[in-house]
Image 1 (cartoon, rainbow over the protein chains, first blue to last red):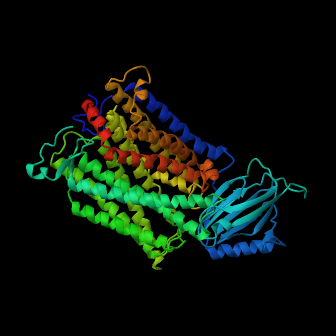
Image 2: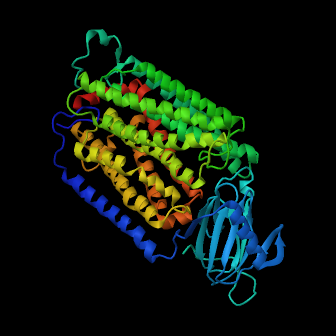
Image 3: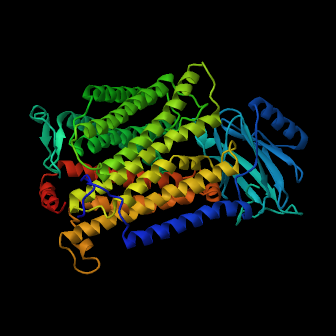
Length: 197
Length: 428
């Protein structure tokens, strides 16, 4: 009565399901429902979500904002030719990705909240905060604003993780997080990142 | 097997009998399957050579290739493995699941050859642009990273050829029904093939919808929004792997039947699971856009949570029914000792069977579980664009598809194992 998958079943094949298959279906379905519930639940209750302030922006207009941002809060220092910017807590922070650099170098304070804007001047780039491993897609023409709070002081790198051309692997930016209320040497080890909103 | 009921004597000369399966094979179908399988193998070879070069560069002590060459070979690797190898192989499966399993002729073999020609021509065009350094854009070729227009045109021609094959596939189903080459419902493996073909139509539609504007963009005629590109392109990029999922599950049922005479425990469950793929798996492609700026949280959550898990449910069902079918097949052949006697007595020396088991385990466990985990909004923040992702899809494509391809190939070529199949055919 049983047939292989190579044989055409004759007549009605919509037949009652074996008990073992029923049990397995139930386990699988309940598990899927748990997974289904967890994502929205964690979205509301969890601390790290990729949702942010999303808006279209012309690359040239975004470049103007970044230039303005560097002008407003620039420290006058440079690291490898890239200006270092120290925005006050709560500020709108603009980071520009382009082939093959991140502009500017950010100097943030531990425990303060910022709105970090990401966009690209040319092609797709990927924002990867190393070594925390926080990843966001940077798409030209789109401003991705993320509410972030640096929870650990330290010296971090921004690695581009979306192929953007032959210099892709050289595209490394920098974020310095100063300890709250002191100018001590930063501790490089860290446990959790302040993710998006 | 039921004998063809209305194949006339005049048509009989166009068929041969397969020594492995005992099925009657239309000679045009035979030739088209072989041509597509050979093309898939060539793509696998090119992709494999590229893989070795990429690996020897990632290995820091060797660091073989220059920066430019590395990205070039990485592009070659991705296109050959994820597009040419997989889709040529699926085309061979579509001919097999329709013409061979239904004892039917291929209704328009000339169109089949035109389609094959288009696919080869398109693939060669893409290979040329990649090898000559005109398309260092990786597999994803995200706009506005620019490749030579012939790169996009090549992909379009390849996709058009593949669409023609899916049309021939559906035409074969119609002809088989009309000429009554089988009675009852189509076999489960063909049903899986239909699932793959429907997903292929959706996938290739996305491919045309994004590569035609991108081709025009590369000629300077129109603009393509980078975020829209990412959205529509993943309708091709991930859905092409979903053709693969459906076709692979169909092949699991096929290999089980050929190696141990495994049975379909319940047609309703297996077929419903295939329908779940059709209904939900395309939306799962949205998991590539979980940390993109262009989409809101509800869009991301609905697509990757509700829709994706319904496709996951389908895979969970197949993950149960395929081994269950193997067990029942073995038990029906008399291997009834104890709880696991059927497993111990299984033909592990037969590459067709051992590959089937490895394919199910590695694809299902390593590939499936990593895929479902990374497709979560919050976990994706950690996993997006990191080496975890190649880790995931190498488990699916290499261990799943690659192993399935090798096991199917070994099935088709091995004469010694065909004897054991003939003996197993008794219990069908």
